[in-house]
Structure formats: structure tokens, C-alpha cells
Length: 212
Ligand SMILES: [Zn+2]
Image (cartoon, rainbow, N blue to C red; front, side, top):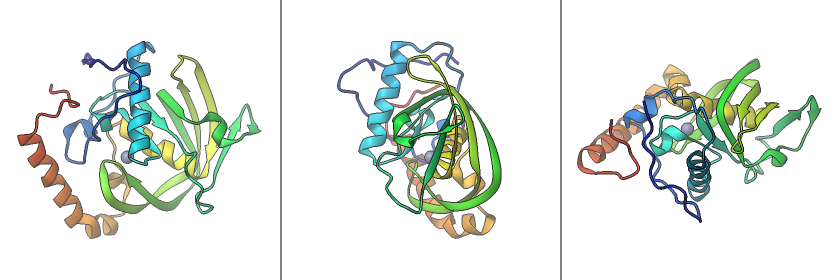
């Protein structure tokens, strides 16, 4: 699929409406980005701004209506001592803030460690939170917004956020990783959100959403 670019090269960066659960783009696998063009850089900047105004810690391209292998993460606002993160660069312990904000293009993520459960939310699922089991460690290889190859290993909350975002790039949502009981409990809320999104899709012509 050839992405249709909108005029994104604007300063300050524009923001997008975050796509909600029920929009088909959230189930699309992102296309690989072959070249980091000014349009991709502008898209990443707009995603960071969209994430910031929505007080998120991660955002995937699918969440602004673009099925691409592109995600952004920024944990600098996370001060909760119950959600610590660790980072290793070139095998040495490093400060997580040093790599923030993080733009990951075509990320390859491999995980290690026993799965642990912790609460997660998602900007595409407003006010829905659930415990999600995920491995505690992740090894990440990606391209950054300047087209440079980056590599690091991480643990804790950063590893969790990156796995959540990497899932989005493959059309996987956190509801897919919930226990059956949790999903049953959330069913009324999820169905309400789903029908609201479907209704909005029927009536709205959202400028941020590409129609196939
Ligand atoms: Zn999400």
C-alpha cells in the first residue's frame, strides 16, 4: 500500500485525533519505512505532539490512522516509583531520559524474562485499564528519526511500553493479551467504545483517516 501523505511539514507540529478501538486501521500491520524522508520526520514530530497533548507515554502510527512501522515513546513524565525502567546502551547502564523522546522506525523487538503483569492503558481505549502479562526485558533494534540505526536493551516499564507499541505496529491490541476474565469484565465498556467508534465512522469524515 502506498501511503498518502498529508501536508505535515509544518512548524509547530500539528496534532492528530487519536484513532479509537473499532477503527479498522488499528488492525493493520504497518508497512515498512524504506527511507526516513522529511514527511516521516514531520509525521514523527506530529505523533510526539499528539502523544504529549493526550498525556500518553507511547503512540503508534496506526493510532493516527497511518499503518506504518513507526512509533514514538516518551517516559520523561513518568515518575511513579512503582513503574521503574532500566536501559543498557552498549552493554552499560544508561539513563532512560537520555534516549527520550524515542522515535522507533521499523523496530525489531525480542523479549526475555518471565512474564510479569502490570496495569496498562492505551490512548485508543480511553479510560480502560487492565493488567497485561509481558516479558520484563526487551532488546530493541530500530532506525531513529535521523535515519540512524539504534540498538538498546531495556527492562521494566520501558520494556512494557515498547512491547505495547510494537504490538500496535503489527495490528495487535492490548485487549488481545488480557486474560479472558479481565476481558469479560471489561466487555460492556469495550462494546460501548466499539459502537461509538463505528457510529462516528459512519457519520464523520475524519481528515486524519485515510480511506482505502
Ligand atoms: Zn496503545
